[in-house]
Image (cartoon, rainbow, N blue to C red; front, top):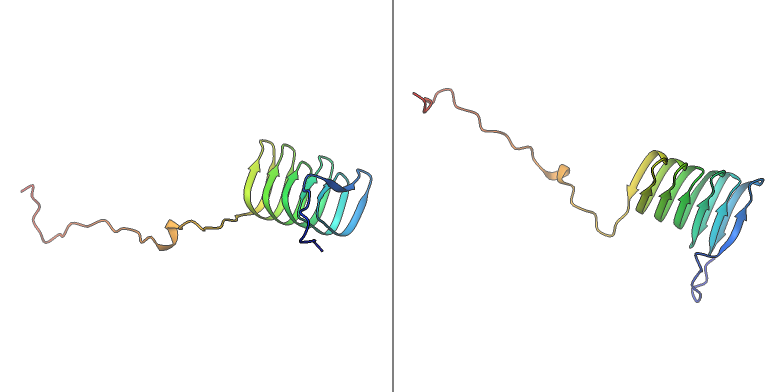
Length: 143
């Protein structure tokens, strides 16, 4: 699908779904995708970016470099960066290295932060320290 001898231009938008369009299916490309209409089911896979406009409604899985959401999105999303902008709404599982949430954005689902190095989880291996208790047999030093 993707040519190894050419680098994609992620800022070039080759696929535009207009406000009055309703589509179902799979979109695969090397450049960016802009959706202003409705996508009911399917998948978007690109080396570029996905822009979900303010009036868009997208129900699809997405794999892209960057995804900007101003409209409504539901599905499984994997990207390097996700921007949930003011008025944007998301439902689903989001796997991402960088996540931006603008004031006025809404998300309901699971956010999984991807990283080359997983930080140490202090809650998995830490044992709860037990406070020493006074031995009732020993006299106190107050006597």
